[in-house]
Image (cartoon, rainbow, N blue to C red; front, top):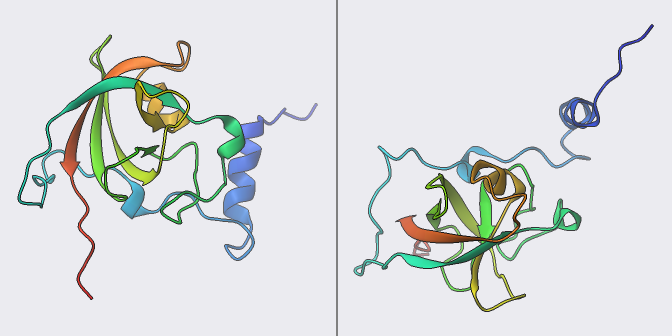
Amino acid sequence: MPKSISASSLCAALLFALPTATVHSAPTAEMRPPSFAAAKKPTRNHVRKPQTGKASYYANRFNGRRTASGHLYYQDAYTAAHRTLPLGTWVKVTNIRNQRSVVVQITDRGPFADPSRIIDLSHRSASDLEMRESGVVPVRLEVVQEYIKPEA
């Protein structure tokens, strides 16, 4: 009797088996969080204060759609949406309820559903923070490395 294959295994196999011209590749190295040891202080002349507020996460229907930065949103990447931080900025997000943290890159704008929400996280990030069941949790944001647009 043949073994059953899970949907996630099948998707992963198809993602890597098809040519990259027809399938968008998995998140690249630049989308992975920097190590805390190698992280630099923000590169602007000012230091941003930590923010506190509520975090939510992207709905499934946004997977594969283009973000404000031009990247495609992948629910398994460590990415997030923030209203004002520069796109490309790396942020440490800490779930205040359980003190779990994750580092994400700001690649989109939002959230716009509720003014008390300060960040929308990818599914992977939300899972790491153990917030998928509750949907919205109180968080603290700290800039790890702020993106500065290169001079032309």
